[in-house]
Amino acid sequence: MKAFYLFLLIFIYVSCTNQIEEKTDLLEKKLEVTPILSLSFDSLLQEVRKLPIRQQIKIVYQAACKNGEEIDGLIKQKNLLLESLSFASKKEKKKILLRLLELYERLAEQRWEDSDSKGIQLSKELETNYSFSQEEEWEIRKIKASLLSKRGLHEQYLPIWFELLAEHRIADNPKLIIEDIFAIANYFAILGDQEKSISLYKEAYELIIENHLPDLTQQCLVRLIYLFYNTQQYEEVVKYTNEIELDSMVSFMPPVYSILSLSYLELQTPDSARFCLIKMNHGLKEGNGMSINCRIADTYIAEKNIDSALVFLNKAMTQFNNQVEQLQKRSIKTSLPFNFLSTYSSLATLYQQNENYEQAVKLFALVEPLMKISITNPVQLEKQVDALIRYSSFCRATKQYEKA
Image 1 (spheres, one colour):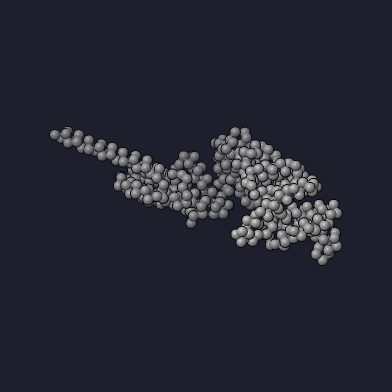
Image 2: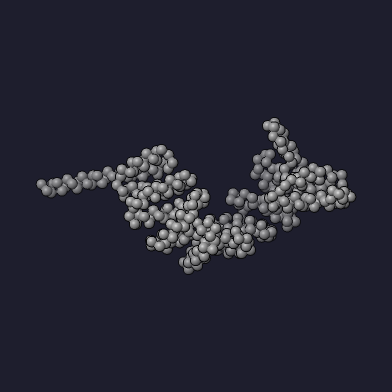
């Protein structure tokens, strides 16, 4: 009889265990496809609360590991993990806290409350109280460095990256070495040490090529091209943009044709600049190429080809007039866009050099109001100053000394 009751007890236990496992699996699958901010998710969560603690923690952890959440979803994931901590074993806590650290990093990117300081504190707690694999330890320090950077604590942030770089070199892990160099190079760029930043990105690019890591190629090229352009190293801009097929480069660096065209103009190769601008223009919707037409006109002005410059300036002006007409129907006032200033003042100077003062005065008069508006953008301010210098020179040449 005792054997019978023992068998019955085991049978009931196994049956209950199987039922719990089946219910756990079913809830896991449902939660996996249910949006975390939905009422359906909350209803399923109530069902989870009825399960044994171990199953609850397992399901909640998996729900908190779903990627692709917006800020409200991240906050909910964080709260779910915090709630489960008090019931978790030390092994489970370690796993939960690691995920929580990742969430704090994501929330810090969204500038949510003091998630950066909480993440820094948590990373210190993890380093002190738990042991990790080498890879996990690197990831914790990487997140810690990222959070310190967001707090502006660069004196603490940079040493971590140099330590990681040294360890990754010893481990001979090219991908991690490159990521470390990216982080350090970005730091020097923020400080304004562009040359040091360029040197580091060049080192990273060589490693990328040597180790055949195409997924990092684009990221490195984008940063290098911007740095070269900002430091007026136009030949380097051209050299590095030629490292990859340009049309494919547009997908991850939309301004590449614009930057390349400006670089070609600075290098006094207006025909190459024009090619880039025409490629840009083909990718624009009709009516959106006003600025491009002005810039194509600039390439002809550089070649002193007034007739061709006028063709594209007239296109730009026609587009502007069409825009004015549409805005007037909605009782919206508008004025000549700022991007006309540089082109018209340059063309006016070319007319002046050809002693066609009548055309020059018309063009300067057209853009004179743009010379007087208040500007804070450094690039636009530079163009405004250039236009004022041209106009002042014209006024002196035509003996308008008071205006000059």
